[in-house]
Length: 432
Image (cartoon, rainbow, N blue to C red; front, top):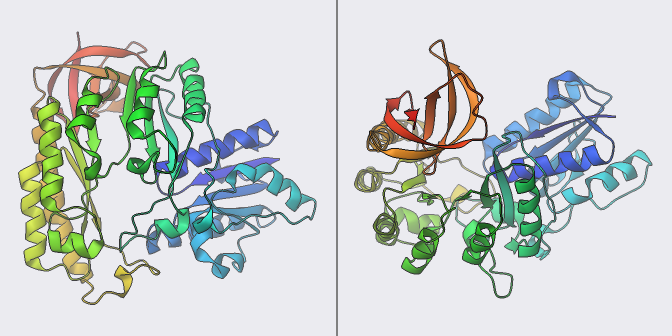
């Protein structure tokens, strides 16, 4: 039986979709491209914004149009928050909520046999970490490993705690087993990811995120360790110094900011001040040599005045991130922010977004230029064609994208190179 899988949203969703694909292959299903035509379509949905909800619905309806006789399965976050609207959608035949994806095969079998199976649980009251694992990814050189689920933060704009439930951490034993398999498969770089990675271990006894990283550091074959998004409060001198001593750790820190203005941060229910965030950045730059600092910013949050926006702009100028991901605030039904007064006009959001996008472009180029003439270590990943030439691309330890002119097959190699100059968002490098 042919199955088409599609993932929407974050890296966690992508990981879970890859894991569901493994379950399907092991059960004898044939995985096919979405457009090819399938007997079963499984869409791992996203609900982080109203736009994400709409995209999820569109993919479900698109699947049903491709093959009206196919079984269309809605899985994931949109299922958890969509309620009866998902259940009553004519394009959806079967729903599978979060923490039930591991039971995908038994749920499909029960459906085929006309039996009922539990497909959605009360995610807000479960303490169980859903055990899913992968043995490989499409990237072949870098593997994202999900180690944590759920969030206890309840930011005023965010629906995720209602879709993913409370913090649940994967055991060190499970993570080690998966990473060892990936290392045996030739993967050299591991990215530890989760819904709220900084909370890893909060529900376990005697462990935390640092202990997890130290465990991965010990696994033979793994040569690089990266982290997903972190909260600035986790950055202490002891934490940073411990990371610096690990030769496999890559100095790239994605610290969620959202706003550089304290009054906006308070309305967002972010649990730090702009000054505390800035101190975390200062500390990282003190401990590491030229670490890559990246972040997320939301513009046009309800009530954001021109003065508050300018505070964020000045904050970004001061910190000079390598990359800043800019998002226009999207009203999400079911969150406190959706009911706030003084919702920002779309035109204002667009104007503010463009100001920060232009600033980001300057900062990104400046950071890449700072590497000119210096030696870097690169993991080479794939060959692309750019301006009529073939190049190998990859990333430095700081996650700068690189271009290397070479006709040889360099896939999967970690090599020393000299950075020459920025080129179209890449760092042009020459192998040493």
